[in-house]
Image (cartoon, rainbow, N blue to C red):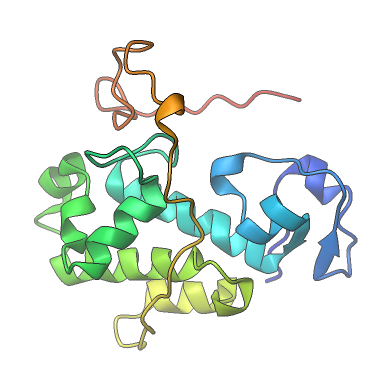
Length: 188
């Protein structure tokens, strides 16, 4: 299995036999872009791994990788998860809906394992991220050893000028209404 860039706009510039490329124009969704692609236009299979890690952490936490998730409003989802992981409170990031509906079938150590895998996928340096085949093995086996993740690629600061609490009454940490998620795919 060879993972490829799933964004059609990027797939057109990514050759069939290429494993890494550089582009002058950044396209894609910023919350899912790897740091090396967002900053330098360099993408590879490890860029897909980063995006997968963001998606995995979004599913576990029930939060989107947009907005800010602490009292100082200075941590995005990756920073929020990383801080809880480093403090030994990883289980606290899990969406309460997930805990209530899965508590009888999913054990705490399995959830923590998935968080750890998600953090491995979003590590700041592409070289530190696992390849997708390794991610699949880690997710499919309880006996495979998983290394400790390094710091994820994220921005930790937010200017006070960017915070406008009066602009919206909807909370950023609420991803769904009526406990369902609808995905809408729009053409470019």
